Image 1 (cartoon, rainbow, N blue to C red):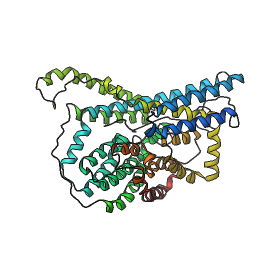
Image 2: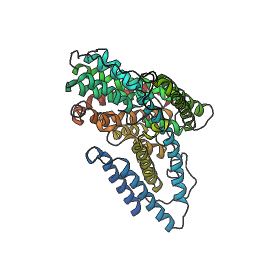
Image 3: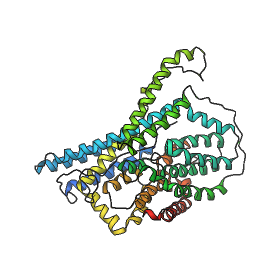
Image 4: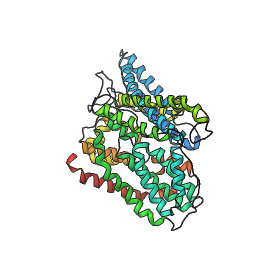
Length: 469
């Protein structure tokens, strides 16, 4: 059920190697302006073509990582050819190595988070929560609010995609063929999961990108809590009246968690605390804390493996496992397509930045439009294009903004994807999970209401966090 984690989290950090003329963390390299060069035009065309294939994944069944990984290789090969022909043999190499280092750091961070989520899924943590909700016999309206609230508060830790899939499973199990309920409840879940992920450094890839960049401190993200609440509550309060006033049939299904499940949840929380502590107090990259936390799970997995024979003798699935616990099986179950997609996006956007296009974009958006208008536009754009490349481009441009503006773009990039069903990983996943009941057009019907929540959350942020601007 759980294909991917986290989006608790992450994709790349900093400014990009020598690309941005607006400052930030860059390499001290001599660069060529290729924005009016045939290679520049070709790079844009290749990236756009690759992203068309990404957006058409549902129809072509071509994994999204394939086109962007190929595009990344071609773009950097073209750049390197121009630099070598101009006698600059090391600049492109240094820029690529810089991007690879930053990507590797965040890929490992994400891999640890995915491993923990896969382990909790295998220990039936999510299945047990789902069965508990189904057994309670809530009404459709109660379930609408309960799944939304749970999605809002679980996504800051477990990521918005994992949370949305879990809550949608509950809605489908209870709602059955009641398309009216399932459709509106799924929309509510997508909004809530995206909103909940916006105020936590671990809740969404974009928030982790901003945190690891060092633009906003860990505790600074919680200034977005009230705006995120408003983003969820405004459309939910309106959609509430579209939910049928009916009582679904309760189920007696009971799914027990496997041995060690609660302790693994505790280890995951301890791992998050370790990552935060390493970064905040020791000034080490958060990934070092996450990898240290992975060792907690490795040692606990060793304990489960060594004691599985004892528990098997009880012939109880609740106390033992049919197969010994193996941590590396959980690592292998990570969503490698997603991890490679991140690689492709990082290298593609990094290449366009190295060519010089992101400096031009930064000048147009953040100088001519102004930071507020540009950041609101970023959120709208993320409803059409995945928020990962959009946010990475903003971080690469590294415009000179106040903390309030960085929080604004974090908010808009996180919740803007709720405007359309294809605007976030949660929405795309639920269209597949609730196929025929939750669709692009059923979501589009409520876009004006979602947009009302989007604008309201921006207004609340600019009001209560005015001192940060």
